[in-house]
Length: 556
Image (cartoon, rainbow, N blue to C red; front, side):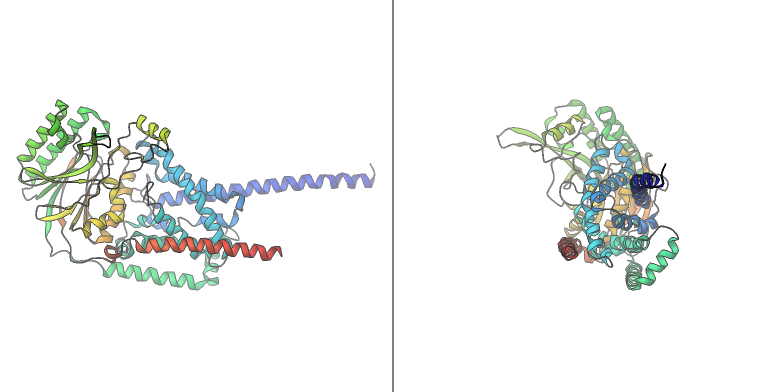
């Protein structure tokens, strides 16, 4: 073979070798990106109550998003949206694994919804990084907080996973929510990830040195954050309220540990028997009890409906037994029940409407009723039957029970104090408890059914959000559940009494009726979150304009 032919052969192989190297490099980059996404999903899920630690590793909340700035910087525009989809789906599949027991469709629907959200959010985060390479993390923070607020709104509103909730065991931070809601705590938790994540733009090795170099390069954002965090913690400490001198109500919280979702008269009878048995035992043990609280749908047959119409004799017999028991008691009872009513529709026909309700029995009668206002999407209501008939049919075929939504912020008066009863999912929304307190409620009494999850982390994730309702309003929060977490949270956002999950029994506790201090949140609600959302949209437009101008200048 001649020398010239040898050179030609070598030259012909170079493009193939180069192509192979490029392909290998691309695959390696994708593998690194997916590894970062998986790490971010694990960090996020571990920050909240989880199977390894039922209280969660709250400190991980401050670095839960650490891989995201690097993913956003590394990824091309072509793959950034698919990466967002993968992150959203994986994160919520891990974090909300217990949805598998909630509804056959839930473990599919919720992760897909969040996959779609992050499909939009990841490109926005990249746009901020591209438009403002040095201080884009501040815009990313605004985008993240706007996302957290928006996803609690409208039909799909779902507050699980707001990063501020990971700090439910840090009571000074919980009390910071009395200023601007959980959103202020989320800002404190999210900021370090977005700021420090930039330290790894040039590599993943020697993280301590990279972070130190990052802080030296941009010290002001770090100093400002540390100052704000210190001020927030100081506020949380000095804003602690002293409720030792206020009236305390002696309450018995009954945990019947029977899931009414099992359905049928046998399950309804078992739930009633357990509730009567534990109530009687509590009252016998402590004659100082002033009020007894049951859980959501602790009694399933609609009391008023079956008393009025008596269509099903077996259900009416259960109603009559319950009412007979209640009339023998000297203290008021709070219980969850369905409230069925016959009304005329637009065609003038009598039809039955059902509400998820809370009732209070006192002085020989039911004194008032509260109808659940904020229903769970898909499993309690679905307003798109005409637009998506196949989805509605699928939900019905999977035993979904649809309720009517209430519209009144009911405040009950019993046992010498006033209280309101957000039902289950409702204690995860700050605006509801705020409206109840502003309507006159001195204590928030949440009635919950989380037994279907068969999961302590699920029940703990739910209670973690209720802790912030106490911090936001400086009112006591009482949780009556049928399986967990039955608890009392004081006006400082501290859990003062907690009953073991998934056992039958009762918890007797003194509940402070504290009303001596109102919070800024009670006055302004989620106004700061709303403002941040509008600012976020304005910044998104600004980032788009700046990126387009930079591209135009580069082309010329």
